[in-house]
Amino acid sequence: PSGMALHGQSPNAPPSGAVLINANENPLGPSKAACDAIARVAPLGGRYDLNGETDLLTRTFAAQNGLKPEYVEVYAGSSEPLHYSVLAFTSPAKSFVTADPSYEAGMYAAKTSQAKVVKVPLTKDYAHDVKAMVAADAQAGVIYICNPNNPTGTVTTKQDIIWALENKPAGSILLVDEAYIHLTDEPDTLDLVAQGKDLIVLRTFSKIYGMAGIRCGFAVGRPDLLAKLKPFGQNAMPITGSAAARASLEDASLVPTRRKIIGDTRRDTIAWLKAGGYKVIGDPQTNCFMIDTGRNGKAVFAAMKAKNVLIGRTWPIWPNAVRVSVGTPEEMAKFKIAFKEVMDAKPT
Ligand code: PLP
Image 1 (cartoon, rainbow, N blue to C red):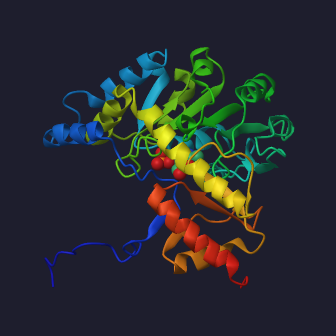
Image 2: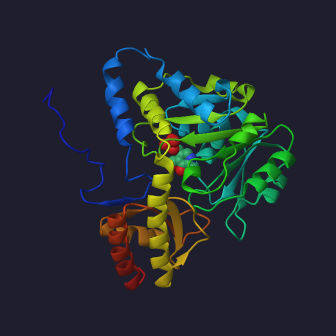
């Protein structure tokens, strides 16, 4: 009947009690300060942005990173500027160069712009092979570097990123996706933006800041590069996202505290896997890693799902490897039990 309310969960929601280590989310969620900021601005939501929350966020981030505010554009997450950057700088004549395996959203955007996609395997240490990526296509439009890389969690050195910037084909940009940078001890590349180099850096509040469902992210780059993203869509930010993001940035202890919590859980889980003779790929530095299961990864995924533990998927280049996100210690304890049972059973 009309007017009937739908209660509780969507039929597509995961079953209750499921261990959700499938989407590189942060089980710690938004910080208390972020939630308080959301409550503070919610009553002002009848206006677009009365207090200039998004401008305050831009200025805060810029000041913290030695950037001019016009080098920072705020979006409702980093998916949007990732998509727009690829649309803006690739075309049928300008290709998209990516590592393999890597985060695939940029590759899908390249299909929309009918650009050639050039996939370059990771090095033997699972870093981006910057030499091969730079040499991959003289007509490259975008060279995408996801650092740390999703799905492997492995890092590419700043030295290599600088080398790529200095040697990339004329007319191309580097798109450096730093969604997971706070979870590592590696340096970021915002200083290269401040120096006016040909790169756009993507940041998100979905990972260490625990705001995947609240939505906020940045494109950071020279104003002339950021201007090229504008024709693909301009939207007002939800003031809740901007206010929560600023509150998160203003809490200096948030990033180091969470890096330690998530890092400790990752190190414990990986040590357990290795002690059990399972093969973890590379030296993961973030909130996800891959396990080479030595058997069909999709079958492992399905067997784990049947035990109500939702792990990440496989990538075509490595059909035996599954991605696992780092959850809470309690969630990882459940993961260990289920994974051992699955691997002890005969492969299906
Ligand atoms: N970039 C990478 C590497 C990611 O892993 C993700 C999400 O998983 C995103 C970008 C997009 O995230 P969001 O749109 O929530 O910022």
